[in-house]
Image (cartoon, rainbow, N blue to C red; front, top):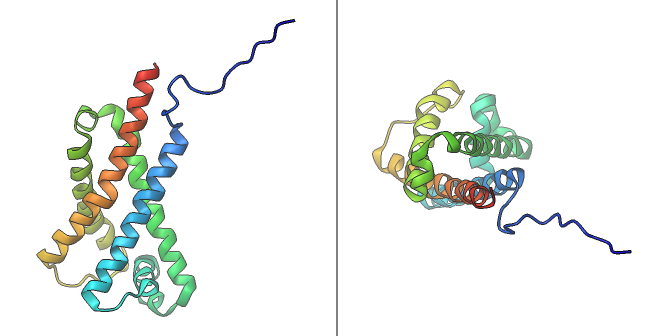
Length: 171
């Protein structure tokens, strides 16, 4: 009696399932961004203080009290950070099939997406939060924008592009 086995391996082994793609893009982009923020903040202030930076993120929801909230507030800040990173991944992932520019220009669209993220975060999210913004400084704005371009926009674009490109090859 001959037996047949059905392979669960996709025709293209490089195709990632959607959930795996989203998770990888989320964790890579979110981690690159927070590490960059910690290092940049350390370079500007002269000391690397990740807990303080993460408490600053938490202050968006909890106000200035977050700055004295210790490790629990730093963990809340880290959760908020990764939540927003996930939102940006999902926006790109679900928008990708409908925006031909994203499909044709993975590098440029990733870099432009980082600028878009910076604009929304700094001109919409932060003003709606409980963070008291300091004075606007072009040097810091451009530096933060560059970080979001390379550490958020680019990895998200590359992961999502690879996913959809792989799907079109197996379809």
